Length: 267
Image 1 (tube, one colour):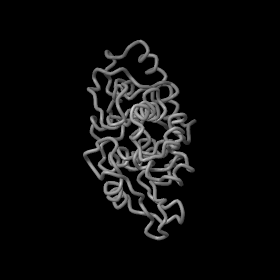
Image 2 (cartoon, helix red, strand yellow):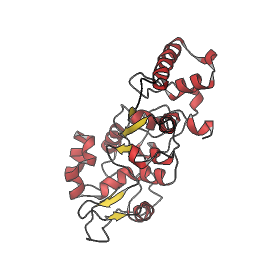
Image 3 (cartoon, one colour):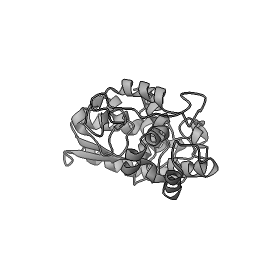
Image 4 (cartoon, helix red, strand yellow):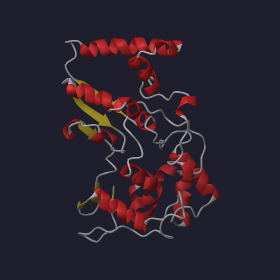
């Protein structure tokens, strides 16, 4: 992988309208580091270490470099047979994908925008009230059964961005590949839905997507699968773009299963 593909930094999160939640970009050189693990190693920390640019390391980064070196030595030793990795939003934000639960992530941004414009989503006043009270309700299974179009409206930018490959894997993703090539990787458990681990050459049986994978589409009613590209085409045709109202239909309509006819097809 090219270095620029592996070492992308996270955009500095500011409070943007929902319309800019996915689309914002910033010059990475001016940004503070973002934690990517419980040890708070960042892609920037790792880049400094692996490229040997020690003069760029702060005191904190030098301490982390020592921890990374000790961990690397153990992994390379005969004492370490297998490694399990658990990853979450840290490696997703390092790819440029904004998070859901952060102070300025999707939920808080959506709450702010809905308070200003209750018509942002195709929802009833009662549904909007519940979302404002608890933004995570936007992905509640009961709400999805009542009104499936909300789900795709909120996730539209992530669906299209994933399909168009707007975001690239980072050094953290390729580290798992390195472990696998060395025969050390037992499994990687991911709490992300972006599908980036599928793009780095890992065997599918080594990846466990705890919260699913946005590239895999199926009917919640009958289980019939749909090709991701076909799903994206239907999303474009039937989902109002709350991020860019000029792009797409004026109103949202449900995506129905080609087997059972229920409006319960989702990624």
